[in-house]
Length: 225
Image (cartoon, helix red, strand yellow):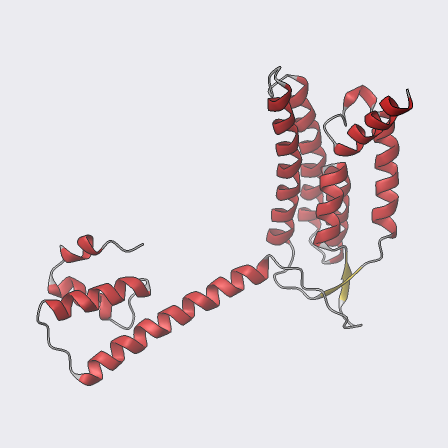
């Protein structure tokens, strides 16, 4: 947000810099500088007014283009083009991470990065996925959520959401930008899901207690008892 009182303190010469076609100021700042100069009695010819208005319009269009590009980076660029590369979708990675943790999600991201030949990033994604899982368990085992059940629940849900967000950011950052691809079959995600369900049912050392699937198992067990 542009503060008019700040620009009001500038001299006419300083404000004229805002009207320079090569300036890096936002369109709102250019607009305000233009209005202040007119209020101070600065004379603009019709051609100069047109040039300034065109400059403001061009800057607004550039901002819109940048905004659209930033949005596109976060989108899944799925295609039916048979020549497009096949990858595990971001949706599949995110759902798997939320339900079963960062380990299965990072495995899918690891395979995606291998497919696009980003080997170092692939290894790091796997290390981050496994590392976050054990860090999450360490935090919860040490009682950082406190003894209050509500606070602990918030910490558990927050850590699950954080893990999914981390993998999403890694995918956006390390995968080629706006890469059109065809989604791979769900066979591997389903297999990973089944493996994780078995592990969560066993729940070795309570590692998976924070996850909703384990809570479902516990509820079913209580109902059966």
